[in-house]
Amino acid sequence: MDLTFDMPDSGLTPQEDDLFTDLLPEELLEKYSRFSEITRSNLLTILHDNENTEVGVSLGFSSMNSEDKFRKGVALSKYTDYRDFIECMQMGDEDLLTSYRLYSFLKTSGTEGDEKIIPLTETALSRYKNYIDTPCAKILERCGGKRFMVSMLRADLSNPQTKPKNILLSGAYYSYQYSHGLLNIDQFAGKEPLTFYHRNCDFFFAKVWLAFVTEDITTMESIFMYDILLFFRYMEKHFSEIIECMESGDIPLSVNLPLNAKNALLSLPVDKKRLQKIKDECEKGFDDIVSRLWPHIKVISGIGSDIYSHEEYVLKKYTGDIPLWYFCYVVSECHIGIAMHPGSKEYLLLPDSAYYEFLPEEHTIEPEKWVKRSSEVEIGQNYELVLTTFNGLYRYMLGDIVKVTGFYGEAPIIRFLYRRNQVLNIAGEKINEKALTSAVNYTLKFYRHDAIEYFVLTNYNETPAHYEAFFSSEKKLDEIDIAYFSRILDTTLRQESFAYGDLRSLNMVAPIKVNWLTPEDYENVRINTDGQSKPIHIVVEPDQDKLQLLLNNDF
Image 1 (cartoon, one colour):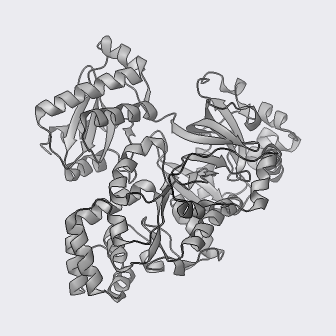
Image 2 (tube, one colour):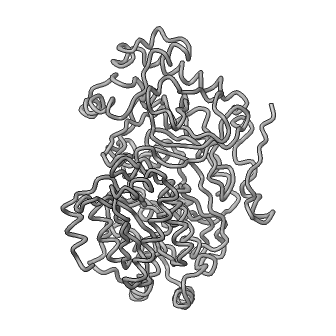
Image 3 (cartoon, helix red, strand yellow):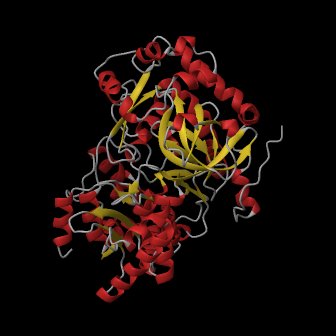
């Protein structure tokens, strides 16, 4: 079977492009020619292994020896269907959702603002690792030098036999790698004390210090690509004071870092000539700062999507022409896909991770009638992912809407579009992230303003209700400019969403209001409305009293 497909032009030189050739070995690539067979085998294995669990007994897994029987006998599910089981599992009950050995419970904010706890099994982790670890290992081997991890990895490696509890997927994933001898900590700049943290702290202070003393960084990594933007924004604001600390060999008590991290920083040799070069280059400005301070960096990696295209556009100010690799499509429920090319946000589904089904985007009424197998999806169509996983989730409606852009062998290639339940909605218009992102990006381009980031939420404190858009920018706008910007954004949003335009015409929704803030004021509002560390463009149902207090401030 032909396993070729056209990837977008990376824009790289042939030498740079060599970094990304043959990322997966032949034995894994071959599985894509048998994708339907393998995912069907995943399903039958899951049913057999879990037939004696409480859920397996109640649904009759033991009698389900085919896809058809499973699809007829098991209804589509959402997180609320699992919440009570998971609470019991956290208290020690076993064989409820899954018979597989639990490794951890993952905390996630959820797509509707509610916190979710997702079970993570060792079986699931073992099935992901070849597809995620192998490409990363090949690129690292080809780059040489040091890995620089921008994100704070919240994992305690002091006792690898102790399983993590209620943490983020990144912490659990790297803890698992370490405990199974799959993680070479010596590859990381700063090694363990400056890569892994047990608690929240001023880790960007440590990361900037570490980056300044490590010239031979070849790969810059993060969990989310957005984390790298935050890193450079922090560097741009604090480089002078960090350099002063490095010159004096002292870390102020006001900097909240674990003692082992402080000691590790102070033990690093500081080259005075390099420090002077860093100071000179930073004072020139931060355009293309990466190539000026770390000339050996060949790739920057982190999870991203079209929704965060504006933040990634801002990031390019710092990174210049260095390839951005959106290496994987991962959610707490499952590792879903791998990107095989820099700059591409199209993902090959991982054959061993799950049993995949696809619900056409438009079919929200009686959805069971419309769910398709992976072999039945069509290129160019949008679907909600439905997963049956090795973590104890069965026909789980993920909420992620993806577009099928092609096939690799029998496997669909997908592109993430937006989260179904992450919407703005006052009177039934249900504006999703995709429409919002398109409207904002057009308005910023039209008005030629370089906002750093933004989010939008609903304000019910006035009648009719309206949306409040918050933009972070170093540039100031006067009231006339803000009013003009607001009109353009409102007009564009009406074009992106017919329902919004219709309700605006009926005066059931008031025009969107723009708040143009300094980065400091923006951060205060963001923390008090959504509290997320990654960009959440739509904040669902904020506390209206708290929102009104914030809007009453003069920022």
